[in-house]
Amino acid sequence: MLVIVAALLCLGSGFLTVRLGWRAVSPSLASILLQLSLAVGFGLGIFSIVFLAVGVSVLKLSLADLLVFFCLLAFYVVFRRSVPPESKQDALPVTDSWCLRLLTAVFAIASACAIYAAIMRALAHPHGDGWDAFAIWNLHARFLFLAGPNWREGFSPLIPWSHPDYPLLIPAVIAHFWTLLGHESQVVPAAVGLLFTFSTAGVLTSSLHILRGRAAALLGGLALLCTPAFIEIGTWQYADIPLSFFFLGAASLLCLHEKGQGHRQNNSGLLVLAGLSAAFATWTKNEGLLFFCSLIAARVIVLFRDKRKSHESPGHRESRQDRFLPFLLGAIPVLLVVLYFKRTVAPPNELFTDANHTLHKLLSGARYWAVIQWFVKQFFRFGHWLWIPITLVMVGYYFAIGSENRSLPSRQGRILRLTLLFTLAGYFVIYLNTPYEIYWHLRFSLNRLFLQLWPTAIFLFSLAVSPHGKRHTASQLGAE
Amino acid sequence: MQPDFTYFGRMHPRRVTICPILFASCCLLSSARLVLQAPRPRDVKASAEKIPRQSDLRFAELRKNLPARGVVGYWGDSALTPPAVGAYYLTQYALAPLVVERSLKHPLVVGNFPDSAAPPVPANLRLVKDFGDGVFLFAAEDAR
Image 1: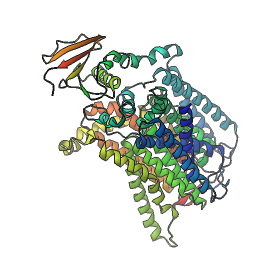
Image 2 (image 1 turned 30 degrees about the vertical axis):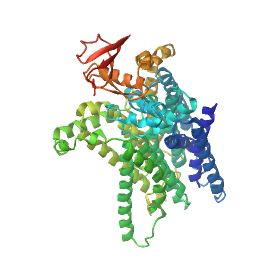
Image 3 (image 1 turned 45 degrees about the vertical axis):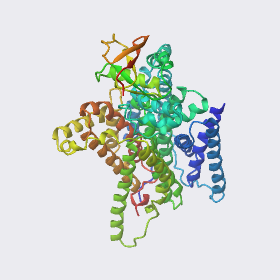
Image 4 (image 1 turned 180 degrees about the vertical axis):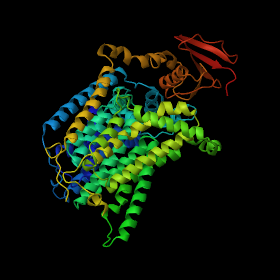
């Protein structure tokens, strides 16, 4: 009973957090689905931090859960008084053609297949199907749950390859619910894996529905739900899918903010939520830090370039999109937790311990060739697709629909494309410098790194290949 | 001014209607793979017990003979092959919150040989108890 109440409080806390930042987006079914999907990840993220702050006392943890929920509720009640009624002006026209009905049916079949496959996998492999679940995430959760005040012993370099420097969102949220249950249950990590997997699909389809309409949402959702590796890795209880959730969350919220700006709506709350999502990515896995830095760098570059252009043009004025403070405000609380963990608990990352040979590795042509080969190979294979890689289908689709049916990237679209590019470049350099045998490292991790970026890549692709209700140019989308 | 578009309406060129259908068909192929490779209901129970059999259940008796926390040594297949590394991880997973170090330099050393007979015991180890199924507890005589 306590766990059910806690699960509702977790979802409620996430939902209230999302609602606090949610303004001026159409009150459609897609909007509600997006808020609920984001609420799942945000709620789990908040509960992981609550556990770290409070520890393994059931009473204290229950009180802390209640306190967090009611604090958010109080903020929400106060905040909502000043919010103007939501606008419906963003609703896109939908033509219920036979083609759209067919796509809806195909999407329903694909969703049913994904749900069936995910549940069967979760039932058959409640401890995860692969080493990461029991060697890293659930092991760390056991230390947090069983070792009490001595939990740091589990993050010792004496346990090789257990990545003691990995952040604690997943282990801490599992330990949170185990503490409330009073015992370990594999239902918890399995449920966390399933929730993140399908919430990612929820964020993708609903945000695309809001930004580009039903067809784009259905096609984007299909591309994700029909990627077998995404469902498999999600149910294996690896952290790559939760990470992909937060990457996508940040990307979709930034684009929604931009859409609101296009209608002159003050929705900086979405920027706060985007910052929170990007920061939760850093609290999920180390690659989140790379994504966060890439996003900041991409934003600085694009804004600098746009400003230089607009200064040269007559009638220049500052755009409200230039504000980045709300994004940082949303990120800072979680970044402080990550900083605390990195400074007080985590040993140095093993990928950067071999500094003496870095220059030699970076100058080795053979290593570049190896990484390029694997990047190209995995581009077609990382999804574990049957016969036809969806990446290839997407490339074909992009060219087949013709340039007249594509959208020019908005400013945020350009920032996010550059972010993905920088993140991929970061992965590339990490492989070049890996202390492990390079082929072994590429073989056992590159597909998962691609999967981390996959939902965001589908999101950006769907934005690019779907025309708006009225075709927008880059300037109309906020680059003025 | 650009013309208005509505998805897959009559104003679209035919290829914009065909392309999504081809796209969806290619996607559905992989959905078939997902379903075909999903575990069968009759196999679920046996599959779900695999990890506990290799970790928690296998080390349950040994766990009662170890301290609640601290560091113990580990003696198993020293090769860095996937089965050997996997056996070590499963031991650590089962014995948490004890830290299991792949070293013989601790007063208590866990012996783990799930797939083979144990090789000759090193001179500094004394067998404390054989728990069966390849699980042993040793005491190290020159431990730090």
